[in-house]
Length: 283
Image 1: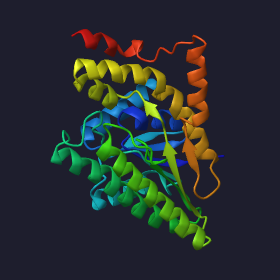
Image 2: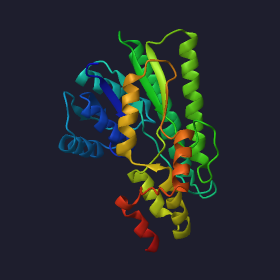
Image 3: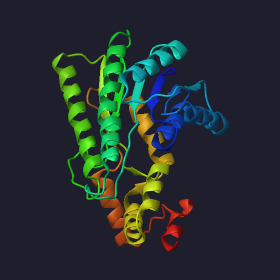
Image 4: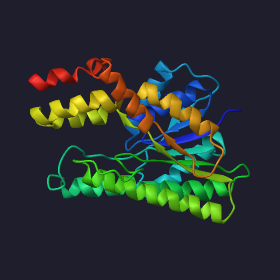
């Protein structure tokens, strides 16, 4: 397959960091990005210390994805450092979930729209233009979530899920444009990574009132997954993708049905004990 150049927005922690680990372990070159250079530098240090890297290397640059100039600068940094970009994975995003719309502040609403919607559009604008000018083209993947792929309404996620539904419409529009133009040199796809237990999700859990947190943790035991489980699986499918409109979905209806049957048969999942968050419910 050969070594690929991969840019991952929002990759200093959580899912994005997991993607970076998985690509590096497979010998690919990775460009890490986040809102601050200190966060990027810390992530690079962790990758170099923890990951058994093949022929790949990791570098990084700060990028606020809602600023088109910074996204363009990230592309330029990647090309100058490694050469043409083969894969652009837009993972950057902001979530404030588990609260009603009325309890969501105007600042949180604006942050979700900027990061999730405008950030996705900025990434697409830069990546599609840049890859279209490359002989080998490339792949652009946008991240869904919060019912964004299916339109499922999830209580406590009014704003976040609305922004992700907008990203779904946007991605479908890009795919249709490329199919209409009969141009598959740049492939556009989406990722629905499921409910991953990340630093951000744990912060949200700890911010909930005790009674709501206990209920949310029970749900998380059923639908939650470890980043170390989902990201290698997703990365393999990104690398193997060959068709326009590739949709990579972790938490399928089949998986949910299997888990439900497992619980009926007495198979209990233990997703949270390693994070010690359950102890916080008695604090």
